[in-house]
Image (cartoon, rainbow, N blue to C red; front, side, top):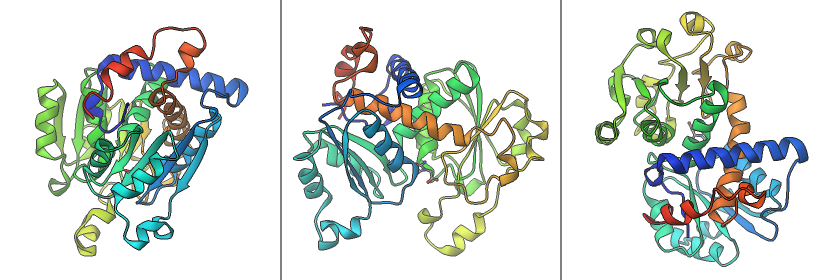
Length: 326
Ligand code: NCD
């Protein structure tokens, strides 16, 4: 059993292995569109919060590998509306599916569900907690776009308190000797318990309120949405909305070889006029996401595109490290 619950569970070698798998998936899709690695498998997609990319990319990933899906996106149409608990809904799906991709608004709920599940559960976002598969695809994007992970300066800007993607990503960056700049208003800072955790892992972290202070030194500008749904009142959200907006002007002092990323959806934090800048990587990021999710679905179900192609580097490490903490 190999749940994907938090970026805490990964060692550097696991991440590197996953990136090799994702790269092999990319080559395979570009040359043949898909294969039968997961033929006969079923993946349940159970989403209690809105999603476009995570839902669709896991769905595409499963189907490109020959697996079927059980998509449950509008939980208001499922037995959840009749009052069924998360635990019971997951129990039902584990009797049909080989893996369950789960998104839920309550931090920690995905890990709780996994503790009782006999099938691998992949955390597709648990409230303000984590989004580990996004962090892995973000790292893969950086690697593909910039050719390396070592020694980079990543600037995260926006709602760092509520954005789960940055919580997961910063922890992974710690494994690769990165420097991270956090740019946010005081009210939306990276939670201090996480900053402490990451410092213990050796992550170099700096906090700012103005993007201008760091843009020139940035290799990856990671922009996040102000997480409207996490604020207690509409007024509190309004007070933060539009606080950072990336425009072509913002990028004038940025490096030529840097990239701009965003987990999407964007609201108003990057203007559409930035989209045509070659440094805008957020649409390419989505495609990398499908390859990484193919790699993850294969590995949690005990498969590997590299070992199936005769490369024996895989699996063993996985069965040892993943799941150990779940
Ligand atoms: C992110 C999420 O759901 O946390 N979206 C995604 O999965 N690509 C980011 C966000 O919603 O702001």
